[in-house]
Length: 468
Figure 1 (spheres, rainbow, N blue to C red):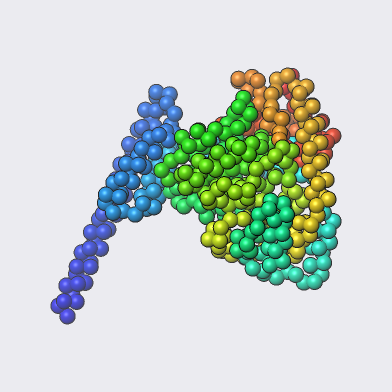
Figure 2: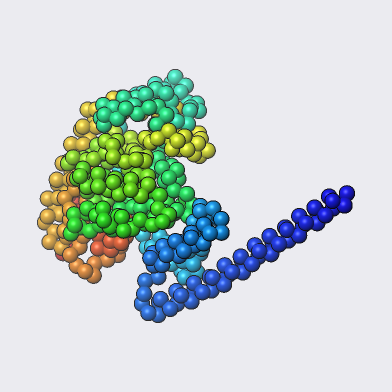
């Protein structure tokens, strides 16, 4: 009994010591926050940028060395440092998202105006106005009548997985195994699941800006940090492999690529794509390739399925190719282990894509005529948008290689696209997305070509009138 009592006493003493150490850590965090706030004040006073990634990188390296010396697990060190840096930014009042005017925030304003009965020329939403294939609608109808309304495998019904395998083999000459495929609720969830699979809390992932804002938001949502590699109009929106390599941090685990690009329409040459993959391989990065716009490619567009990446997750969707945005069905292609993680995440979040929609998706994969028609209509819209933009002296732009957007930039140094977009919507009834939604591009705005040609022409001419 005395031995047992002594052990209990020792256990209580150790727990008290752990509690004291934990309280000490909290006190040190409070002191660190006070120092961080003072640093923020000094930076503001001197006109210095508040965000300094070089300092963050050096701190991380130093703490990792100390953690290794002390036997602290690397991932825990990364998580702690990431949390401390995030807290420092909070007390310094740095908005981690910046003043990014997201497409969804503009969509909310536009819908409100439309519900009030006001006409809006929609050049904002990334949604083609094409109808879905008739065979898809019919297949969904038949599936509903046949009571295909139950839970299915989270990976997707075997018939759809097999149809996807055949589609990828025919299109990309990629022989995917069933365990490498996952059907998801839309392409957006496929991207989120890919990021959640590749990036843990405290780690970082790279994005090539300008970029769809959901990449950054999703990286931050899983507790990661988005490392931006900026490109410019004068360089044709082409990323530099050297710049990408310079921006890789000790905790970087992935890079997100998106070609054709939203918002620029850029397609990188296959040789440049391979160079980027080589950099990713050298640094053990998972390449997340969002190829949702690949069917709207009007120049040779490289695919991650062509090889070259040691680790990759492809994400795509039925939304653009077959105009099935409201059906919410997408997919991911990756190695077996990553696919299993995505399947587990899907089963936790939504169980499965609705069964009857999956039967419709099978028919979409067979609807080549409609996919070709949609592609050619988008080609025409890009050409028409280009002709109209060429008439506006105050704007310059990159003629899109693909996708369904144009991303013009004002020649005026003082131009504020956020203010312009707000005024354009409120006074002229035309909706566009300001460039701040896609990175640090205050003089740019995105024009979506999801509306009919005559609407695109009317909207761009109103833009020209306002700029003039």
